[in-house]
Amino acid sequence: MDDFSAQIYTQVHQIPYGKISTYGEIAKFSGFPGYARHVGRLMATLPEGSKIPWHRVVNAKGMISLTGNDLIRQREKLLAEGIDVSESGKISLRHYRWNGDPV
DNA sequence: TGGTTGACAACCA
DNA sequence: GTGGTTGCCAACC
Image (cartoon, rainbow, N blue to C red; front, side):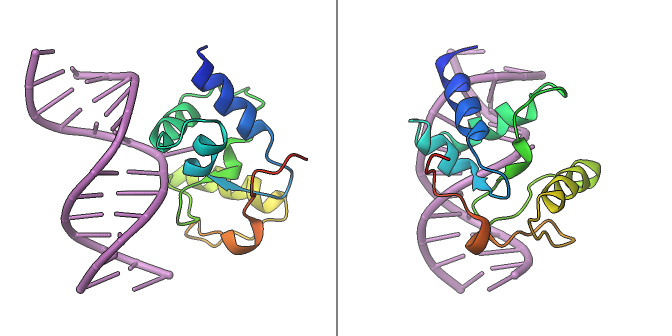
């Protein structure tokens, strides 16, 4: 557990219910601008029982980058929080984007 | 050591 | 809105 992952985990954990953010923003807010890919890699390697709301993190286009079963799983979680997600995994960033403000 | 890959981002057509 | 290209940075092979 290095500082980078710790910061990312904390930041993602700060995303309030019903809100989402992008990989790039998460990285930036955590103090590591330009490390968007690493945020994605971190999410990909999260343990199943993790308390991290990884499903609230999407790419800059506001779309889920996953495919197949993983995409469905994330979409279901978001829908359960009241976030509108299209069948293709597209989200209305305009309304659900989190600006990084503390809860 | 060096080329490839990736849950990305910004830009352009 | 969608699809292709380029830039990034570390992990992976």
